[in-house]
Image (cartoon, rainbow, N blue to C red; front, side, top):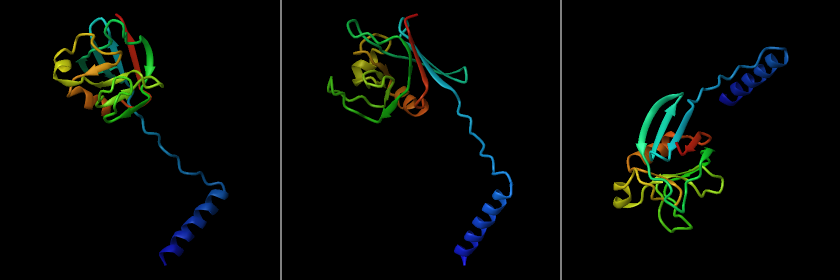
Length: 151
């Protein structure tokens, strides 16, 4: 009986649509604009939502010889705990900003690196603290703008 009721509803819906009734309008859900701006000269990252500050944190970016690229990038993808194929270290809460996957946000590796946030020490990535990294991983969606600038 339930199948025949569903079929009748489907037929009535198709008939009303074919007679010129308007199809229901699907409401778009507005997704807040979330961005990250890395200030290399200050070793800081500013996170904004709809133009308002959402968080501010110390980072470690590229050390001499391994500069973090400057410019405007886009969050590409995220991986929970990948292994760097180049440096063979874990990168918890990886958020890639380059299509190649060579540069992104991740938690600083180990206590020594965590204690030195605010200094340029990485191989080009943006290292984050142990509480900030999981927040960024879940808060900054794919497609978000990431700006990296020297000053």
